[in-house]
Image 1 (cartoon, rainbow, N blue to C red):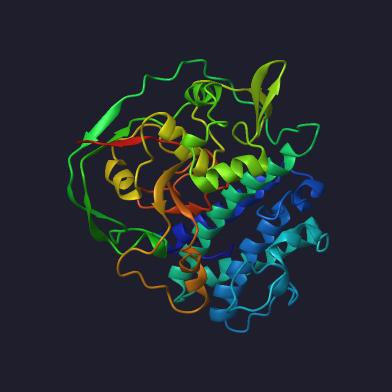
Image 2: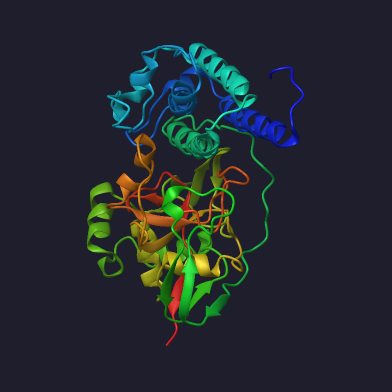
Length: 394
């Protein structure tokens, strides 16, 4: 950090920048160079790539655009570590990120140190990039969660079932009985209210009409999902959307991702290795198809995202699993993509995806809010997706 006496607001910004950047490196620290290079499926990325891409974001959108005289650390990195920004230029194909054995981890870390150092000098001076920097920090926090999602999938493919971190003490309490909260219908407002930070897809704030509904106070537990499985949930087409039933049969799904039977009992692969399924814990790593099938089996449905946001202030168990909604990921009324390459951040993905709400155990502290709209294709399971039920009131 520059040896300067800084105003409190500026010092806070420097501290926050360093905290977020350091946290990413802490998440990578338990992993070997081999761990950080492997790519276990096209949708996942190597840890090393996440470390480099989050650095590329600051270099590309802040330093190259706003820091006078900045010279890129390595011009080749513009191609290697661009993710999907067409306006920036061509990029290495996503499914082949695991083939980038060079630069190695040490060179990527040197890249991070270089960009972080220049960024700290840049932050200590007057500049007009505050919005971009804040976006970059929240972007990096998204990739912190992706690091855990992706390495969990990679380690699960290893027959040794290696653990990313030591196991935590298990809570042996049973799940609370499923309680419900009712909400009267009417005109409500949802979306970003103009305070603090939000991604562009969280706004504009707008009104929508809700009919009366009820929402479960906690997410669906593993024990409740086991009952669905035991009653033939994966073998009964009547519970499934057509595309979901095709997905079940094509992929041979019989349980949530990472579940397997061992000595006649269900176990689940976690970041701490293979563990017995805990009936009280929220079920995790299910797709939107599985969530909708469970809801139909239970005689309920998934909450619409406006319902979820309206109820968010009283719901229990938020932040344990991302909760699938029954809402497609589309633009809010009046939404406009930001100009330039940053406009590609969210808007261009508004097709063939479903919205999740609430955050999960891998989401960085302070990174969630009631308006946050996560989104994934309905067949995705490697993120920490779970289920909360809702129903109509007549």
